[in-house]
Length: 280
Ligand code: SAM
Image (cartoon, protein in one colour):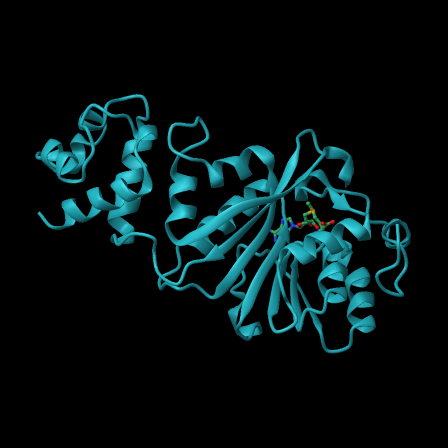
């Protein structure tokens, strides 16, 4: 474990502030500062950006982001026990780290950030997925963020990057791939964390596209995809019957065989179907 700054090793920080991991907050900490620096580098050049970090915990990734030269980091952490450790980091990087003790699901961070903005987080997977969906469905596109660098359970990471025809393919893949470019950029075994979780993890990097890959109304597309995957084993002509009495014609208009199933159809065709339904 090499020093990326003059602060104490994370094991000492955790001991000094009695930060025994809480399962209820999904606390699996990264203690190797080489690893957190590597994850920070996956966020790209942060020297000209504000970074929103959600769930900093004892601050391993926070220290990585600051050591990599982030212009400013805004860290939102729910656990008040982490505040003294994070204050120590803030003091070591004057004016560059703001910490807010809050639930990231309740707080709008935008008032605290100046564009360009990148997001980095190692969160419990349910909070991470909920935030990812919110970040992918803002009222306006392009969104407030340039990129998201997020740790997930590997199984969730695979759902984000999945291609048609695979078991992991579904709403999350279509939502992520419509307006961003998601890639799995790092795999981590359970031993990378303390305490180790039961499953493997992966870092997903998503870059926001300036405009959607294919035109479609977001609400119609969301409805089409949700309805299709709610009954993923049914043929689309029957799974999507509730959307229009003329669904077969709309499917054919979009270049989709009415006998295909949800997981066989690609993003471009779903967008064409949403446009066809809106044009009726
Ligand atoms: N980033 C640290 C690391 O990599 O070692 C901690 C990661 S740990 C998996 C998740 C962190 O998210 C914990 O510190 C936990 O307290 C925090 N957390 C959990 N739910 C949260 C929420 N809703 N809002 C903000 N932070 C949350």
